[in-house]
Length: 372
Image 1: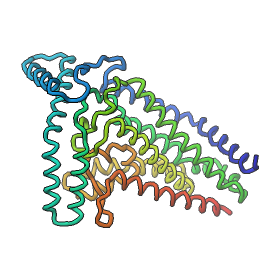
Image 2 (image 1 turned 120 degrees about the vertical axis):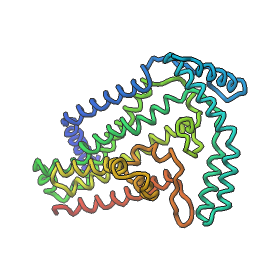
Image 3 (image 1 turned 90 degrees about the vertical axis):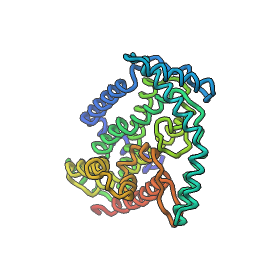
Image 4 (image 1 turned 60 degrees about the vertical axis):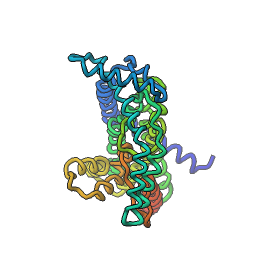
């Protein structure tokens, strides 16, 4: 084994040891996970709750639509419906909504193509054409129980976001800053050798931590709120009516996990880089919180109906917003790249990857020269 490999292993063990000693971090993660489960139960019901839509699962049929219409008409006549009847009525509503969307799909596609032909610019023509192609590819026929995947996506953008925020702010953002505060940095930087290995060790441990966080909270949600298999192939329009993407819930969930991991890793890189430059832990925590939570604060407090559309799009390129993932897929948004419309999720992913690669190269240059 090379000496450099042995040193890297020791540094990784050292970083893991320091991470395990951060009791406040682990306590905060546990509190957020428990709170997230509590609100999930309020939203989804108990893990063992029975499903009420077993008769309305599969592909749309004339007979299924007729039963849903009859059930909906009967429900309207009830003066005091029970909670179970309300859930059953939601099943009727889902079937009728899917039937309506399927029935007017060709009309919507034709309308979009017509708007494209009448558009005044080449970009708008391409934009409408792309939206029409996406809308035409949606398969509205599968219906049934999509609540499991809707819950997984919702928790990913709320509870999962909060868990990752804690890991990134109190774990990654203070990684180097803590070394300065405790005086360990002087020892770590005393030699020209090993600095890049130290950075590599911190990157590996931080990426492992965010990866483990994503895997654990998704596994917990799946174990607690799985409601059968029928939701895998249901189009996401059942929950995100304005989305033009021809994706099923299973596909969007897969993209969600992948995107969130990529964005979280990119945030690890950004926050580690800042931590290298900032010696005060409090400042590192503040800036980390600003990077992760600032975009949502800006959108909630400052944005309104008069905010220009490009500002709404621009804020979604921030890692803090993109970490929620589903905000990228719930509407049709494109970015103009040399006259061609690029879908927002694709544009965000490309920008994130390019930025991360540039920062990684810069980080290794900076640490190689730091305190030489």
